[in-house]
Image (cartoon, rainbow, N blue to C red):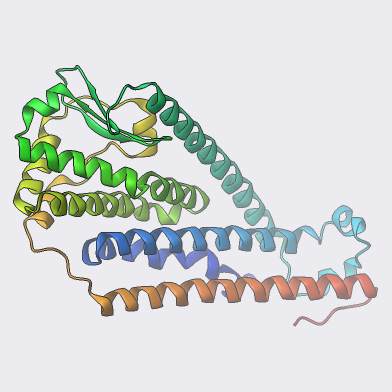
Length: 317
């Protein structure tokens, strides 16, 4: 592939659009919609960019005599083609190896944390999914499992009023009911596959917190109480949560000032036009990436077919 041909690099750089738009979308769209949109688009784009790295790596690898001999390919035909490049293949192959290792390591961490969280949840005595631990250190977090647990310390309960405690527990239950840890784990894998998407991770952490905040506000029917609960709980908490909860990203308070400010505003409107526009752009970006990747893969397939069938030159598609 020609070094100055921008086509092969479209799926690799397209995630920049989602990365730049992540925070504005998390703040302007309803939290649930923002979470779904950012998670799905980042997963799709990271997978496509990794697949494109594979196509680029293979396109150059077949120029190596030992590789070409494995499939009885004509080296003169391949080397005459402008659609392969050994330097690009080397960079793409190294990047693909790094991506594969990064994703496998992140998957290992997430699975390990999920199993540890489920084990901890099973061992905690609870009533109606609520586990109260006797500890003066203010702590509250959701611990996913089968079933999950809302864990809160006596120190945290003492720091809040009755209404605020209800809002806090509703917030943590919303994390479990919405399976927010799965969204965060999915985005963590997407970022491991394409680090350009790193801003999406903090955006989804914020949108899932806002999603739980809005559920809490509905539960207590008072946005001001929910805002006070969020602020006071964040100020009271001083210690790190257990490792499984921290690893899954379900125990951090997130950007508290922005969350409190949002709760002191009226309930977010649905904003159908903005949601449709954002979804349309995301579909267009993913579609363009898929189309480009498929075209490059098809060109490579044609080159391989040609190199298998002759010992001359193959015309570039």
